Image 1 (cartoon, rainbow, N blue to C red):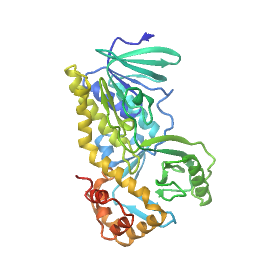
Image 2: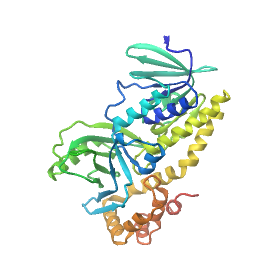
Image 3: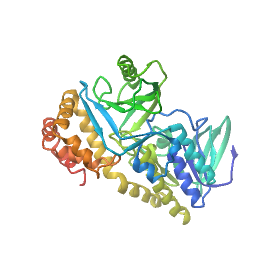
Image 4: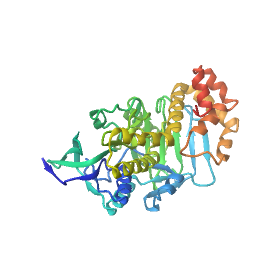
Length: 406
């Protein structure tokens, strides 16, 4: 095999925005990083709506050039088409142009000195006493990349996680999405129901004039459910045609038990750092990318890249996100058990009780941080009856009401 460089400080596997953020931060700290991406280009379609919060936009200085539009409202439809309109006066989220977003992050990292190798499929990672050896096939040529440490940020379902002795995601869901032509749809729509997206939800998200993304998450057969949804939206006159290609992807609902090892960290969707209630992973992934870079800076500076030393990465990201991920996961499990009848009842109660207005006016509640929203819902005097009718285990009901603070 050919070695393409004597030694890198960091080899990042995966070319998405989380990968690029890790590499960019480390390059700014003076380290030499390489990004290895198996796809032929970084700007291809992805199974992601690209909705991120105003907080995410500000935290990471995301430019207007990669934003399709800002949104401040959405219409939610229950299984029997009851609707809830949720809104705030100020924009709450931005819909990204995902290919442009990916390219922006990669270009910024390259400007900072990060080397990119696209069309480079990693076949194995082996540890030596002083380096990690990454075997790569780049357009038919076998190469070896040597690095002091490796970061896995390949997205969901990478076999590399299991191959390196780390246990994969314990729970996950699959998604399907298509870009469609619309008839003047200008607001995000979200659909619930066992005949639309069993135990999860579907979406219609406008991007640019006359275009939108339609997709869903489901534990079983998402393509069949998406075809049915597209036919329904055509019949309702919301979209022009349902005969279009899909993209597919997986979403982990729980983080990996272990996101570090000797000379290795796992970041982003690969690590399961994803909001379980919505499947959104961009913001949490970028936050963890910064945590990973800071951890690596400390460990590289003292040349100690052992699992014992790198374990501080997992402690750090769990302090930041642990409560949110736990609360979101258990709330997700409760939601899956509601069923269509209870969900319709819940829709009606949320509107008649004024809870929607209460949540709208609570400025401290966030698009990204769901634990407090979950706690409010489970504590509401009218909604408590719905959850008690489900006969949830007492400890789970109590923990969700407290936002899993214990």
